[in-house]
Length: 119
Image (cartoon, helix red, strand yellow):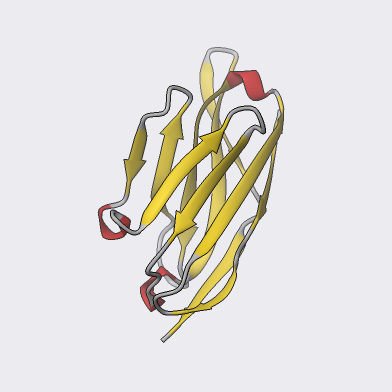
């Protein structure tokens, strides 16, 4: 079992910045990859960025150059630095961890944090 606790969402004007944090606890040694997804009203959940235990990252094209994902292994925490925010970035952001459970990858989710970007 892995527990994920998110923080850092809020309301910001277009062009502003926010940093999301996600702290993992529990069976953290089995975490393969952590990432951030988002879901806007009426839209499907999409992967924003992910980072493997080895540090390899994958970032959504529409946020490349603006968002950066990083992790602090000592704190078991993953961060999403969001700069130059746009109204279209408004969504609920969810932390995700892909965890090895009995030789299968299992997804765990945080509770979600609201990010609202005003124009």
